Image (cartoon, rainbow, N blue to C red):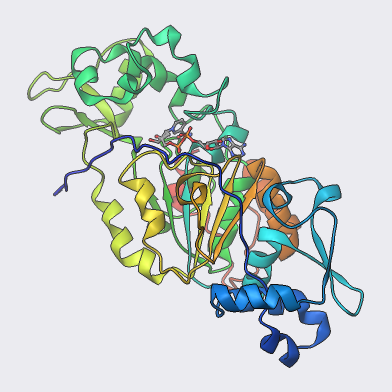
Length: 392
Ligand code: CNA
């Protein structure tokens, strides 16, 4: 396999905390549209008006904002009591904020090619710590691995000298101990609704495959435990044998060059899998980018989010603003919902009317019944593909 050079260097995060600056309604569109579609007018105008027009429209708007002002934290809260709600002239209220806007665009069929970009935060609800969350993240709990600095555990040169710290961590991360959570099943539902162009994940826990997202919809950008090879000469090694050795506290040794074998998880300084370069085709085609549970600190992955067209909505679902969402000005079509990811995803699912369907899918899949039938698929193929089932 040809491998391009990667640069998984840490990127210096820009300082400062960004607030969402949302554009508002286009008055001309508003006049053309029924009053009950006020939220919709607002949202669609975001796709077409310039910042100057939006600013003018803001001054002319008739709507009444209930609750706190729609700036800063009001976009970030997951508490219904402080959620901004717009009342239309007819008196009916529609959910506002990032999730309301994106949900309406999806319901209207304006979105057909969603690219999901994900990180360790989508798996914390499955009990797998992320890297950087203070207190619970792996970087805050590395004392037991006796390493000089946190990133050493994923540094290929350090591994060459001493593979034991990574193998200790690998014992915890190897797929098998954890189950996918609601967020994974939401992404699978995007696929089942025919909306998922591709999911790009940095995770190595295998939960995307385990929940039934098919291989051709998934790019595991930082590799996985599914295969193993010598870290020096790349000679493949049986993954199950590597796992057994690591679980028993041994170092699997390459039969060709006697180097240490490791699972094909991408370390700092290593090449990314060939599949990663599919991004050059996918991101220009995306009509919605969903960024979930990542600090966007690892390159080149982090910069992918800047390669969608500037008119394409980008939705960040995370605890805190990250990457381009830390900067001012934000893109006009940038949205973020800050807070617990499972809560945010569930709210979006409720707006879309998918919540029960996702729960049914999750329950049947997790109970091993696989009885869920995808309503969008008359052939009854429920995407519980053999590659997914084989991981159970
Ligand atoms: P990270 O740097 O730890 O960032 C995670 C982000 O998710 C942070 O911004 C958190 O605030 C946020 N977050 C965590 N939990 C939640 C939650 N419940 N709700 C909302 N936001 C939350 O991890 P990244 O993925 O950005 O870094 C990439 C690394 C992490 C990749 O190379 C992975 O291999 C590596 N990693 C993967 C796993 C896994 O596979 N599950 C676990 C730990 C680390």
